[in-house]
Image 1 (cartoon, rainbow, N blue to C red):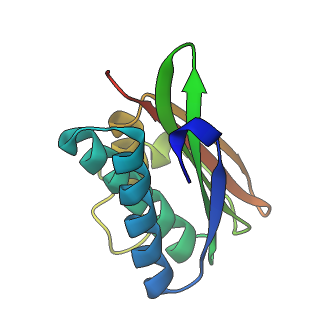
Image 2: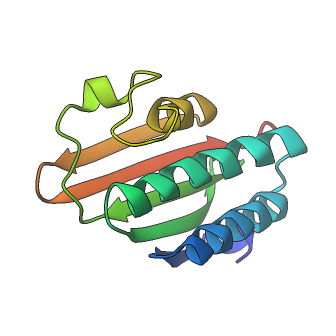
Length: 138
């Protein structure tokens, strides 16, 4: 995938190995897009948190990585989908420290802070789709 192609690639998130594959693919996409090391880490961290949530709380799903070009800017959009139970109280789920599992409860709120754009579509019983975007500063 190259930044000039506005390409997208989708990865399954069904196993621990899939989580590793997603991390590596996101890292490679950030390098190819021209992100500096700090922004690479931000995007990879957000991807890891969101993919892990889809795996643990959503019973698995997908992560789509899109390279973007808009008005002379380059960026990456990650779309994480699952068909799990949905998020019953999104506002509470975005609060740091809130968790329904054994984690630290920084996943959703942390991902929101790490990225420029953050959108959540969730419906109880029908799953969750989270789309996040980060733009290069160049």
